[in-house]
Each structure stands twice: as C-alpha cells, then as structure tokens.
Length: 162
View 1 (cartoon, one colour):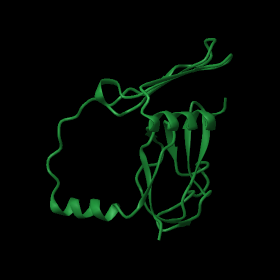
View 2: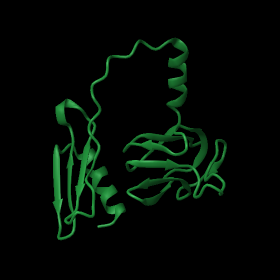
View 3: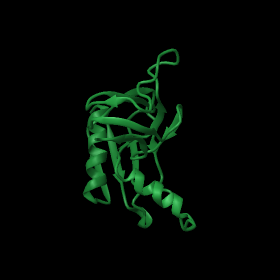
C-alpha cells in the first residue's frame, strides 16, 4: 500500500462519518479513528510489523475556550476569504515551499496555477510528497510558513478561481 492509497483511505474515512476503521494486510496495519470525545478531529494510527516502523498518531485537539466575538474588520476579512478556494493539507508532516534549499519557490502570491501544478512538498516519515493543485486560479495567500509542521486538512493556500 503506497502513500496515495493511505491518503485516499484517510479522506474517505473522514468524510464517511465512521468512528473507526481498521485495515490489516500481511505487511501493514492501519487504524483510523474519528469523533472521539465529541471532537470532529480524526486520529490516525499506523503501525507495521517489526520494530522498524514507528507508530504515528495525531491526537484530537483539546477543547479550547470560546473566542471573543470578532470585530467588524475581521468579519469583513472573513467574508472576503469566502470567495476563495482553500487548498488543504492531505497529510500530516512538514510543509516546504521549495523542492530544495537552493531552489526557487514552487509558487508565490500572485502566481497563476492550473490543476496538476505542484504547490509545495510535505515531508512525512522521511518521504517527500508533492502536493498538486486540484484547481486552477491565482494564489492569493500562503497560510503556512516554510518548514512548519502541518496537520491533516490544515489550510495551506487561498486560490482565487476567477
């Protein structure tokens, strides 16, 4: 089972509303849990036989205190962002805007992109995964700093589809 198949499985389980899914083959065992303690944040556990593969787990976020009401200027900014498409992280890992430290950025604010263009790389368990755009448009905002950790479904870019 390759990383793309695992990503597809995670997306399917997150959208399905199932509370737990287990998949076990000869060389891999994956358990995906969602909805624990009333949270909609999924938990992913992956383990493989033999001591070579570590267990990866992302625990649900703890309940936070309610935020203060937004000021009118923040509400206008939120309405402004509503017309954009948000490109989210398909996996947990470390976000990189360049293919290598000495190379140029994949995309910058103002760049026009098409479906299939590589936007960034996310490193997960020493594997570098190209994150490709599924939409065409113009990059309006980069929401994550280079070399920052990202979570599954975390917003990465805002794209203006017009």
